[in-house]
Image 1 (tube, helix red, strand yellow):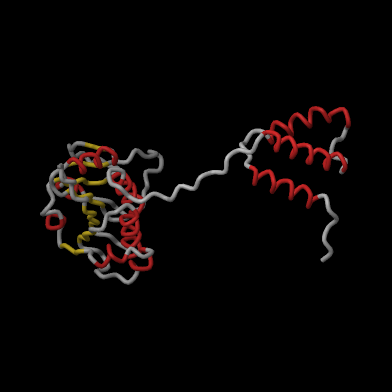
Image 2: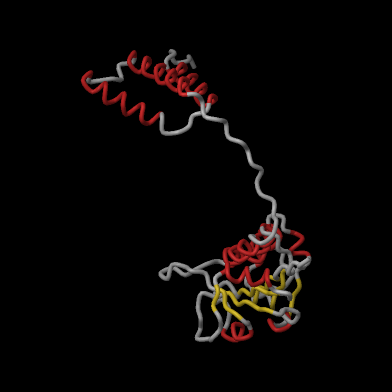
Length: 242
């Protein structure tokens, strides 16, 4: 049996705001990642602003480890991915988040996704330490991702290779027989006619055709049609006294 590769660690280098660390932790836990490493966070650690921003990702924050350098933070990792939208002239293989995730799942060792500070991103020396660069295809006129967005992109791509819970499937009501739709159309037309909607008279046929086309575009269920009967009936009553 093939042993599953360990999940990647998330390394935030010189993060500035506690809120952003908390939001990154939330993004991690959404997609099954729990190991967070911080390199010289500007405001120290722990940071009281991180908890509320994490929206309950307490396990990630409680186990977060702080390091004095990026080299120390990734010392146990065999493959290091630097995330940046700028190549900075460093000659490294450049991957998309999807391609990087596939490599991480195929790796026998520990991998690290490395993210830079909010304002400036990773420095050239940080990128030089990495084995590969991960770059998100992005609008060149506005190449600006915040820290949590960058983390969630990579975490999501990694999560595709693991079994996470999906929202429960809710079966849709089957479409109602066409006779039910005809009865609804008849009900609607009678009330519209009584209210003087079809004016001028010579446009009645075209209006009816347009109305039928609109109503038959979707697969109405029996409950949908029953609800519409109730709405039409209610609209035809006298307004309720207030």
